Image 1: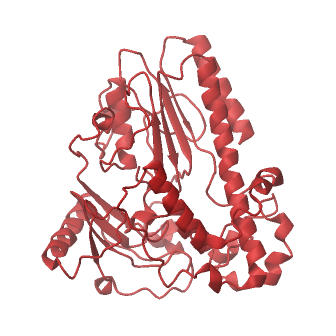
Image 2: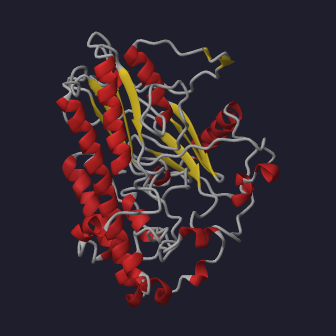
Image 3: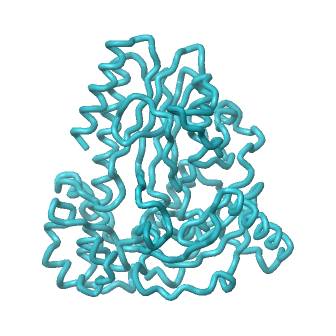
Length: 429
């Protein structure tokens, strides 16, 4: 990460030296905090003892801090922990030193990434372009990942191959000092992932619920955005970033790129909300689906159903799709999806279930396929064998723009000149 930050800084310096009046665009996507959580001990050791009381206590502290900061409504409720996720007190005592270390490493990894983001911002400030550079800081991984099993893992690939039973407490304790190092492919336990998705239900992969799709996002652009330190309640999705970039830069949506006809962008620019916290929401409908965990958002209401559990990689018995139980939430009044209203409003639930099918048809989600690893194999899944996958976790995108215009930002795994392709991510800003 240090090296890629150096290269990003050098690239920005080069752009401003060669073309000082020309806007630039860059996308910075460190591995944090996607597994494996790799960081040197001095960063992890800063957090020794910080998580000794476990993930349930951490979740309570996080919820209180969120309210203190004003990033969630004062009347928001902390959702209940599902029975599939063990309480901290239920975990074996001999495993807890490993569990604590997992979270210490994760926290050090996140701070390490944040440190290097800070270096980038310092470079922009030194160049005198920080205030007129729009910066999107998206922090998350589709919701925190619960793919590390109930106990966490020294090597995530073990679970991916259906051999999680190998990693007994004894196995992991023997490797305690190697967690987070180059010989590990470590990941934390499900309980920590759930705590990192506070105040919502579930985690990454469970795209039906907010815990599987919501991420904290910071937007900074002093030359254009008058508001300071405010929160915006309007629903927005990561697919809205690209339209925002184009509107900010005063550019039309490209119809062709390198002679190839483009599909229309599916998002809605969020620039309208920058200086109007009370503006009417423009992104009013959005489907969600991952491994058949699915849902629909429409004008504040959500209908959702969980179909599978993220940490059961192999041999999971999934119900028939028609047997999935749907839940209904009014997030206009229930920010965290804490109160299921399905029994009280069956007509509303049926309306949203129908809307999900309409949107799923429109955006090529159907047919639903709940297979796991098979979907990654083109010859089994029925896809062409030539493919390109892009993933990102904590990301920073920034674009320096002429003062006479608005601006915004988006993606490309290494800092490089602007590209017109925008990778799709399962994130909600």
